[in-house]
Image (cartoon, rainbow, N blue to C red):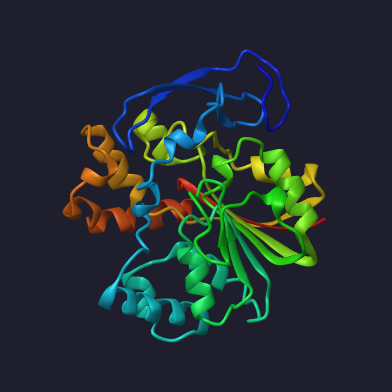
Length: 298
């Protein structure tokens, strides 16, 4: 096989993993490139949309109503404007925290690729980022004028921030995605990418029960060098990389070990305080199972 990331060829080690999020148990083969470390599905399913059922995006923890929604709006305001930092500590929102760290002006043009139902897009627009839009090819239909069923190839203009929060691993051709990102990026724009990584304690410990493997939706599980390699191939450069893994790596993977679907994992298991402490510890050591990469034009 030829690696779809670094183009190296070889007889790569094969790994098998089962679909566990919805409990189908269907097995999929992945190959681990010995040159760049990327773990990638051997054969991309022709019917990918089949694996994104209507309730797929209902798993977004930011989808809330009533007083919970009001509390989260206050938390979002604190993240983006400062103050009440305890709200962000009580209910972390890693995606918004990563955006807040870019200190963008309110007039910035922001594109969220793989936005799902648009919780992050709406959170930014509520806080004054009126030129924020989201696209997702797996939506059933457009949800609003700024949350649309589209792919990168259908987007035009130049964007100050292009972000992919756990969406790059779902795209069949990362090289094509990076080429489109380079086309759309403003001269002084930035690219913010968050992905799972196989260079992590969770992958080594849980193996095919690792919650972030998520076959076949996660077509690629990147190593820490992959995004630098992809960026360089398309006129971009890596500015920063850090870990932002969360307790999900523990409670999700432990639930899968018990044979549970994601929605069946009980709340007490999700709220285990040790998981949060351990995630922070792994992040500090560079062993978390999720990483953030900041890119710009080379």
